[in-house]
Image (tube, rainbow, N blue to C red):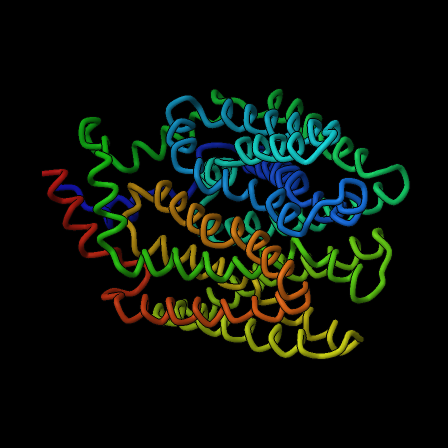
Amino acid sequence: MHSPEAEADRLPETPAVSRAYAWLVFALSFGLLLSDHMSRQVLSAVFPSLKMEWGLSDTQMGALSGIVALMVGLLTIPLSLLADRWGRVRSMTLMATVWSVATLGCALSANFGEMFAARLVVGVGEAAYGSVGTAVVLALFPRHQRASLSGALMAGGAFGAVLGMALGGYIAARVGWRWSFGAIALFGLILVVIYRTTVTERRLRPAQDVQRAAVAQPPARRTLTFRFVLKALFSTPSFVCVCVGSGLQLFIMGAVVAWMPSYLNRYYGMAIVSAGVTAAVFVLIGGVGMTVCGVLTDRLSRHRPACTWRMAIAYSLTCCALLGVALRLPAGRLQMVLMGAGALFMGGTAGPAGAMVAGLIPASIHATAFATLALANNLLGLAPGPVVLGVLADRIGLLGALQVIPFVALAAALVFALGERHSTRAPGQGAPRARAEQRRTDA
């Protein structure tokens, strides 16, 4: 009888590709991840220009930002499954090509409708890159490096957002907002060419073959039914709580990242380029926070697994307190300092959430589990965050809307607390129901 714990234990410690090639794949995958989020967040830097040129409402601008995350959330699972069958390298190349060409389409848009359609296609291209790219990278490194690499890839999204907003604002201020989209599209297309000529399915196949041999189960038993996957995931209450809590916390990040340039432009009187650069600093702080909070969680929970849940709760509460106080202060240095401190914890739960998912769900369906987590992050957080804040801003003003947003972190903390209560085993030991279902499937 095959058990998921045994499967996890037999995963290879040493990868089947050279260390140099593994790091090359990581660097190129990280570069495409930067392109992914630069294409997504460059829009925030040119919000003031679009509002002035096209007369858009805050709701319309929020929709342009949120539609990308919405498509990512809706398509991440089906496109990840297709990538596993069709080939991950080919899929990543196609996805990067799609979002880069669509970003070029944004530069050529003549009105809100055309821009919305182009942004929708950007979301389609970006939908599965996170899960597929992570799967490609982690297969090339030993187990003891995978947590660090996962945190780096998660933070890479924030760094890409920083570059997108900063570079987009700089270019828009000098040659116009259309060139902002065009330059970032060109960057993505150049990386596609380099990636496609350097990374191939053939060169990655040794690592994939080693993983299959490590699991050491007959081919018939490696086939997981859709029914089993659903039961393994959603019959585990703690897993559901992780997904919901993570999505709620990232609601704050999605809203603040999208609207920070506009806030600085309206309430601090900053020019477009200055607002974009300053907002990029806050996003950079958020990316650093993802990495730091993940490392801190690993250190404190190494011998106390339950601490992972408590760290996630602490990050949410700290974010709520810092941003809640900051946004009720008058514009000035103290407000900026406290907002920066709050930004450090906006994405702090990303690392703990990933660790909890890995511990709660059998290794045989980790890819689907992480795709489900990404779905929750987008549908509950990154997609509705900018839209909801935009709707509120049209009614109570941008400042009033921002003052409400931090309280979502209280809901995230509550959900994480419920997840800890329902968790019957510490992270790393697997979910009892999922293990039982796995055994019935294998039998």
